[in-house]
Every structure is written in structure tokens, then in C-alpha cells.
Image 1 (cartoon, one colour):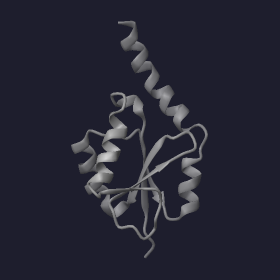
Image 2 (cartoon, helix red, strand yellow):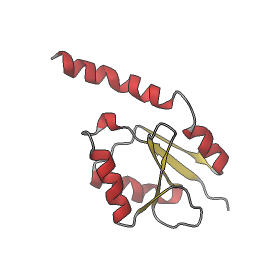
Image 3 (cartoon, one colour):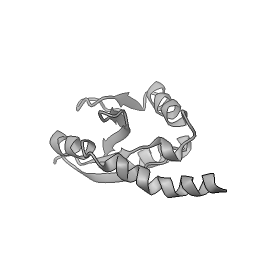
Image 4 (cartoon, one colour):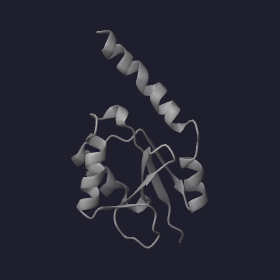
Length: 118
């Protein structure tokens, strides 16, 4: 049976400055994550970056509940979660979407604009 993967797009917009980087590093230091894609690595999460250094978490659909629990513990808020990847090509296509983080910024901006007005 082919493994299905989930990917979570992350953004600093929902996190205090620097917090997301610290928590991703903590996942790595706890041996729950690895940086980059290795199909033979059995850690819970793979941390990937697009060409603009935006982080993504890649994990097996079968581990989704464990990953969500770990993210809640670390107070990491995913912006977008997509879970229909069965090959590297589809994962790369999703990460390479030019407008993905523009959309995240547009969705987050009204909230921050409102805070700055008050």
C-alpha cells in the first residue's frame, strides 16, 4: 500500500517573532523531526523549506493525530494543511505554488491591520 502524506504550511504571521524557528529546532533536537526529505527516515515530521525559506511540515497521514498533538504542545499553528500526497512530485508542486504564501499573508493581514489601527 502506498503511503499518503500530509503537508502543513507554516507562517510566522501567527507566531511571535522567532518563536516558530525555535519550536521547529526543538522538534529536531527532540529527535521528532528532520530537516529535508529522506524517504527512509522514520521520524515523525520532516521540515522542508521553499525557495523563500517558508517552512512546511511533511508527515504520514497515519501519524496525523500524533503530529497535531505535538503541534498543540509546541503552540505551532499551521496555516494550511493538505493531505493528498503520494509522491515527491505532488509534494514539490504544492510547495512551489507561487501564490501560497501570498494567500497566507492576505488572509492574515486584515487581522494585523485591525490590531495596528487600535
